[in-house]
Length: 229
Image 1: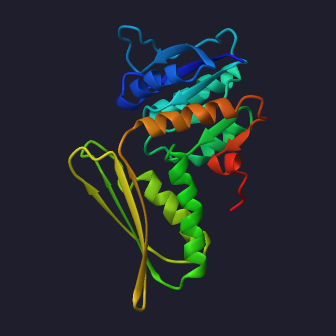
Image 2: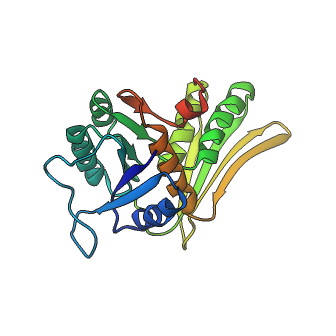
C-alpha cells in the first residue's frame, strides 16, 4: 500500500529531516512540502481540497500557529494528522479536530521516550521519593520546560506525586531528559538522550502510517503500545 506524505513546516529543521527520512519508508511514494512562506519546492497549505486524500497523512513540525492551520487543512480534507510542533498544547483544538479525523499528538516523537513515560509513572507509584526532572536542549529551543518534561510531569502527577522541574538551554544539544528519584540512602535515575533528530522524524512517520484506517480520535504512542495509563 502506498501513501502520500504532506509535511507542514517543511522549511524548518525537523521538516527537512522528515523529508529525508521519508525516503527510508517504501510505503511513502510521494511527498508534498508546505510552510508559512513559499520558496523553491515549498508551497503554502492549499485553502481548498486536495485530491486522493484517503491514502495520505500530514506531519506538522512548524509552530503552534502552523499546527492549527494544519489541523484545519486536515479536517477539510479528512486527512489524518500527526502533530509534533514544539509548544503546541491547545488540547481543546486537538480534541475538536479529533472528532472529525484521526489526530496523533505527542510532545516527543521518539518511541523510546514514550516508553520511559510509562516507566516514570511506575517508579513514582512505587517509590516514596523526592522527584526532580531536568531537561537540556539547544539554545534555539523557545519553550521551557520542554513539552517532554511536562509530559513526564503529567505521568508522575497521575501517580499522586509532586515533583520539581529545571531547564537548561545550551549549545546544540538535541535533547536530554533526566528524572531523579531520591530517597533515604539511595537514588534512581531515569534518563534519555537524543543524539539525532532522525528518531523524531521516524517516530512521526511511523505514527502517520499507523493512523491509516483509524476512526476519528485523539491518539498517542500509548495507543500504539496498547497501554492504558
